[in-house]
Length: 332
Image 1: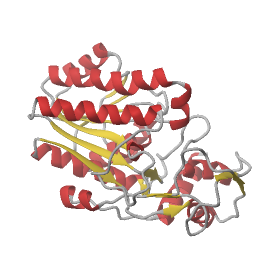
Image 2: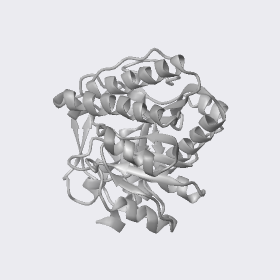
Image 3: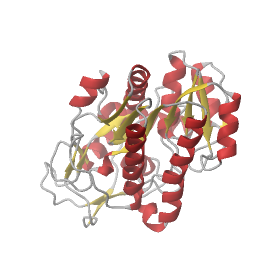
């Protein structure tokens, strides 16, 4: 049996794919390359020394999905495919709802048709909304402040309702905090198309000179240096968390919700200075007013991940920034 990775050529999917292949799993990769590069599967093969089927397809295309399931014996699905920019979701709400919700429903129909009932779903810490309670634990009330967050929240509910209707499913909903870093090989990492919406790839473009400075939105929060604090997790730790979730889903009929983070908060300036250390030079920044809806501090309670999955992140921001810079130097 093989593991199907939807959106498998993306930042997180590619690292999870590499992790699975490295431990001897059979994988099938699906991606429409809307926010990834077609050379990624080849780079994964170079890292792992293994071949695997690759399909350029969209989860909205049920015939393409059905063909993948017909041609491969799929035991589980790790579902990464979807649009993921908070800012863009305000501009293109219909595209986000169609891709992220309709696409997920379409995928679930095909999985059910082929009696494939194990899924690890890529959710987001944005479903906690603007909660002031930290750390964020899985039993906090959920809410959404943008269309992207709504798509994650609605998809979570769809999966929970599916399990309630049929407890033979095994579903793990993983709420990511802020993935960063790159694979140790320097061959795969975070390289979004267009202007990055995440902090670390934006800092990387300042380091390469592509952008003149980092925009820091707010330096008057009640934090140690006035800038916003977030939980950043190394993408290879995140990949290991997915493997732990997959192992759990294989052994249990369940619908579990689990945070993936480090349980530590780092400020914008913490990340900037860690990147300066990695690249060996001073990086410029400019202060801007706070963005509407931003909160001062957001980091994960990771105790349930350790209890349920036996997972704990091992790497810190120095490793995140050093691996990111290694990838940037190797790629550009």
